[in-house]
Length: 250
Length: 250
DNA sequence: CGGGAAGTTGAAGAGCGTCAAAAGTAGTGG
DNA sequence: CCACTACTTTTGACGCTCTTCAACTTCCCG
Image 1 (cartoon, each protein chain N blue to C red):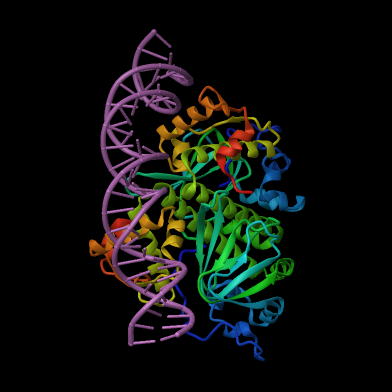
Image 2: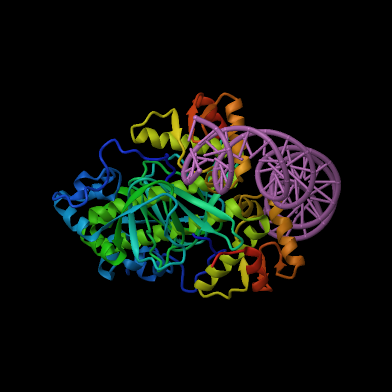
């Protein structure tokens, strides 16, 4: 659910070494960012035994709102969007997900949202019941999960402020800054952001239309706050200006 | 965070019998709705030993965004609003809270939102560290907490759809239906809703202005979907019409 | 009663959405 | 390498919903 940065290109190697003798979790680039970091080395085998690795190309729907919540997912590489639809086709993207993010934490019987890959993706897929049993046996992992859920809750509240009370310009500026911050947390430079989602996706995430998002990008470019290198690479030229435009609290 | 119904008037007796010999949790009207329901009777003493009861009148701010997250709260009666502010004074209410709801689940060092009572309130106040220690000792309670957090996350996503993609009329209709449903879950009739919050609060929750909320109420009344008995009591006359107006998924 | 807050209603305007078309970009195949 | 197509993005003109500003009404508590 956390906002995030486009196309996570792992500095280490790819998520799975399928068929390797060593536990794949040990070499998983996403491990340190996810719940797995709370799992002791000797428990990793039980974790990896429960999981099925899965590879997806871009644009694949791998989770459908309303379906039985049979599985729990952990993204190991790539990015995805999570969304909900209204009857007449309006769409709200509730989050973009990246390596380390979790998905399917539905304690309801059915998923309450759909998810679709944006890029090539790899993920760990756990049968839900089995995952819940593992949680009971690994209190540290459960605590980590609770901590991640509470962070997501805080992010969701921040997003409510954006959707309920910010102007188009503030929304786009906040969005870019969030992506930049996420990039920094994962060791990238904070002044360049690569977008793995379309303008329509951004619009559906920010509660705007494609046209307004596009116009707002243009406006920020004309102000000298950002520069666009193609449609998908954004250089932050004037961070202070962007932060003023975002009207972020704190 | 869950939407909810105005002025929780407990069908049993008030939350605390201060100074009683028996454990106050045993007579707590909020127990069955909260995490405490996952605590064995013999553990209730440890729980109640950690808590300080607190009483508030209406309009008291008991939690401030940015303050040290020193305590964790459990509402035992009454209602409150949780909100975030933007620098220029704009406000987004991220939720209305009622008996059984939790507050202060910040795994950050500081609160990320403020909270203010709407009515007379009682709450249980736990020092955060101590509460975390109790959680470690009571895995069932921790699991219950995780389940509540994931429900809140689903509710937050639903609210994002409302804020990002619904019209004023759809927002107000959804809001009223949510209150009505919450009322039903707590044994009240689903066709009358008592509002414990002002029009301004509703507006700040729905991402609108007071005027628009007021006009929308009037519109729904003129359609015959609702009737207003004073400003704070809403009778749902035509539930189907209201559900159509809400454009809820599913 | 009376005064202040909360709610309602009205008129005008702004910001964003809608509709339409042009420009840019990527993939495909001759 | 270029042409062709399909899609995404950008830009423009216009309209609508909701906001803003203002006045009036209702409610409530002393």
